[in-house]
Amino acid sequence: MQLSRRDFLRILGIAGAAGLVPGLANSAPRSNDMYQMQGFGDVRLMHITDTHAQLMPIYYREPNLNLGLGEAFGRPPHLVTGSLLKYYGISPNTPLAHAYTPLNYVEAAKKYGKLGGFAHLKTLVEKARGEFGASKTLLFDTGDTWQGSGTAFWSRGTDMVDVCNLLGVDVMTGHWEFTYLEEEVRKNLAAFKGDFVAQNVKVKEDALFNGAKAFDENSGHAFRPYVMKELGKHRIAVIGQAFPYTPIANPSRFIPNWTFGINAIDLQELVRTIRAKEKPDAVVLISHNGMDVDIKLASEVTGIDVIFGGHTHDAVPQPFVVRNASGRTLVTNAGTNGKFLAVMDLKLGNGGVQEFRYKLLPVFANELKAHSGMQTLIDQIRAPHLAKLQKPLATAGTLLYRRGNFDGPFDQVICDALRKRNDAQIALSPGFRWGTSVLPGQTITMEHLLDQTCMTYPETYAREMSGMDIKNILEDVADNLFNPDPYYQQGGDMVRVGGMSYRIDPVAGFGKRIDEMRLDNGEVVEASKKYRVAGWATVGAKSPGEPVWDTVAAHLQDVKTVEIKKLNVPMLKNIGHNPGLDFS
Image 1 (cartoon, rainbow, N blue to C red):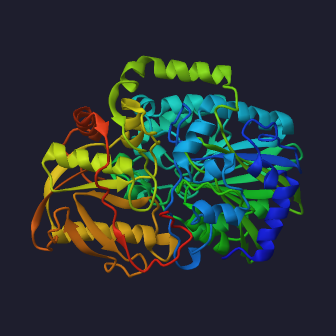
Image 2: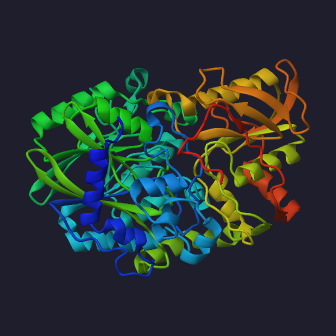
Image 3: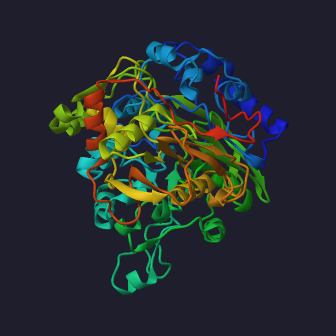
């Protein structure tokens, strides 16, 4: 459902009343106005998502390519650069413009510094709690917290549990959390001091019969589906929605006892039951669906006041208003890598949200003093691994980043390494949206590399594939990304390719999007011909090769200075003028 002009103007009016437009948008980063949060209403709900275990402040470039097609055309989150700034009334060359877009990225990054870092985030969370009243606040984490760094991998996520406990996360759901083994997931959740909720994760019947653990054996829920929270005089119902395609997008062999799904019918029945029995003042969903899925879900499932979303890493400055049969649902998404803290104040009444104020606050590390207790914990976590993390591998001769529907310079580095080290004609690398950025002239360390690659199934492969096999892979991933029905989209971006190019028509039907496949030397990729292909991160059986970070580290040490000579960018067809694309 598209945001009407009336709703958009209303949001701008609310933002102005909250000091967002033009105050925050145009303020200098050292202005005292940056983090002023005058309290409003009855409760304050805070939200982080997709931090990907980034304990320290980082650089992270936002995309200049995030296509929205069909109903999503010109709608958040599919707005980039100037289109995004214009839509939200944000002035260019400001702190918010830098936080939300890649405009003048290198220059702006040097000017404003790094963002995120849990010690700086902790300071901002404490400020937001203290100013409003801790008893009337909640902090949500919508997942992808235990994965994305070397320390998280080596500790099997326990470091992030400790950090989130100190941060004060009240309720969370998950996605990459499930890519550890089931016993590790349950061990971590036993140590987590908050509540983990997921209405859409259930234990298979045969697993239950064989004694698998469940939160509720009658319903089959693997985890608590929702939790009630009392904030002063008000009661908030918090429902969890884990990533619905976890066993498809990630190896099901790690968690063979569980099923996932969107489960919209079950969700609607749960919301009705909660409203009838619990009589909450508000119902919120903490979701790892991805924003397009959340928008469709909000149009179909009634009775949810706010969806705090994650998965697609979209930094959306204001909630998107979805009208449905019961009124409206506010849909949010709070970025990635710890760059942002979302703060929503709600005025409640008659069993729902009457008014709201919202800020998506960039966590500028230069402007927020590191919390001493959190920094001490982070230093303790990193100390045993510091020498390995800081190991120099090469120098960045250009800006290296990963984010965009089709390509990224760091993805090209990975593909180049896979081809060279495996003597392959073609490389395939997953279109993950996690991974930090490296500025030109910076030393690329092992930590930077692990930020791009660190996960529980990093093994590489080199095998023979036919041209038709390669086309089918590209077609399958393209449908995951561009299927007109959000419920068939799994998030992420196109598989990255090395050594070849292709043309893609995102608006075409399944199996008809990809053509013009050619090797770098111009040779046509033939359907029946065999090619040597290297890749990593297989979701089926474990691959036989070394971890991808070993492959890329060796490559980086060989090249010494990374200059991207050729970026394997596909040709785009039938895109026209799309506000989710800016190649300028």
